[in-house]
Length: 323
Image 1: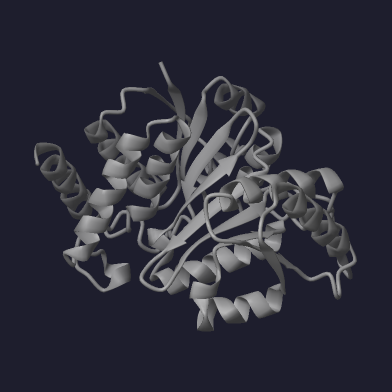
Image 2: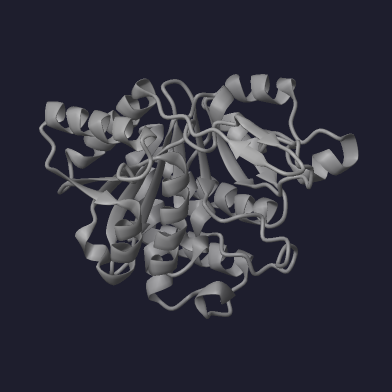
C-alpha cells in the first residue's frame, strides 16, 4: 500500500489539505495517510517545529503531501521546508503555470543557491553564501530537459553577466541541453521577469536557480490569477513532496475562504508521480470545469467557501464518472 506523509502545517494549511484528501478519496486513491505535527504550532508548544524523528518518519513513507508552514520568529531557526528538501534531497522543484495566457513549467533547483543555509548574522553585517555546483546544475538541467522533450523548448534563466556562480550554471545547462538535443534559449532573470508579464506565451519550460525560481514562480502565479491556484512538486531520486505554492496566510486562517485549488492540484501531481494518470486527469478536469462555471473563492473575486469549492470539484468528478 502507498504511504503518504501528511503535513497539514499552519494557517490555512489544514483547511486546504483536508480538501485535497477529500478529493483524493473521491478519485479512488486508497493509500495510507500518516499525519505529522510539524510547523509553528508545534514550535510554540514544544520549542521544535520539526525533529529528527519526523524526518525519519517521512523517509519511511513514499512521499509527502504538504500544506503550509509559518516560519518561527527566530533568526537562528532554519526553515522547516528547506530542511526537508535538503535532508530528503528533493533537488527539483516543478511549478506548472497554466491559464488562458500561459502554459509553462518552471523547473527550479531546490537545494543550493542562496538557500544553501550557509549564513552568518551579525550586528553590523550579515552574509549568505550562494553555492552553485556542477552536480546540482547538471541534475536540474536533466530534469528540465526530460520535461522539455515532450514540449516546445527550454529557456535557461540566469544572471551570469553579474554573478560568476551563474557562469557555471549556464555552461552546465547548455551542455546538458545539447546532449539531450533540446532546443533552448537563454535569458537574464530580470529580462525573464519582464517578459513573463508582457509576453508570457513565449515561455514553455524554464530552468533556473533556487531564489530566481522562487520569485519567478510567484510572479507567474499572479499572471495565472492567484497564488491559490498553483501547485508544485519537489522531486528527488527516492522521495517527493507535493505542496501548493502559497504560504500559511494566517490572516484568513479559520475563515473557510482559502483557495484549495493549489492543494488539490498538488494532490493530482502526486497521483501522476505514483503513475495514476487517470485519477490525476480526473481531478484536473474537475477543477477546470468548476472554475469555468464561475465557481471561485474570494481571492479570485468569487464567493465560494473552501468546502463549497471542494464540493463542486467532487460533484464534477462524479458527473464525469457517471457520464
